Length: 294
Image: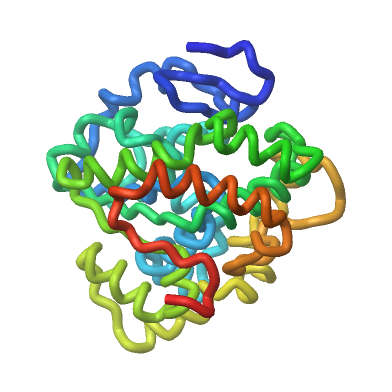
């Protein structure tokens, strides 16, 4: 375990956000964490639609969330597994337990390979991941602030960021998909057709929803709705738990597809494409770089 970096804690090849790792023992024993058959894990690389999908899962599982009778933050319904900043006793949580995680495939609890518990893996085109990471790094103090896209691009392509190397994370989960009960969802497809995505996720989770439920979920899982919903927008978490670097900017910033075009130069984009083509050429996952395509 390498804890020499102020911002990154490297453990078994995975880069954790050091400031919010509050239980080293839990990390070291994470593979032996006892999994229940009805556990659900949402797994993403950072900045790939985690908060959004946490909201969708919370809405699918909680009628009280849908109808507004329960005022519980989404991050409490779907807590982060490896960043247990609120010190929840996961063992005492009632079933079904919902978790969010950025872990790579080789670090998750071994019990997930019995293929009973379910995993939803959301991936996003990495140029937009990079762009979102850049703005987030300049919003919260738990991430190393990046002075420029160029500075982040070098670190990102070298895996020296939270989550490690994006290519390894996505490839790893895809190549080991048969070891798990896993559904792959693409961020951009969710943006294009949220309703179909909600139905696909709920079908995978074997959750029957009425037409009214589906309409409510789709409405409350839109970016604009979430931005104004204090249960989902993480504004208080940024201010009170993660720490703001600036009063400008919000956790939920744009939630768009193709914003990378406003940030990457032609040369940077070409450099990124070369690495992407080399690292991902034999991974048949579909990627959408702009909503005008696909």
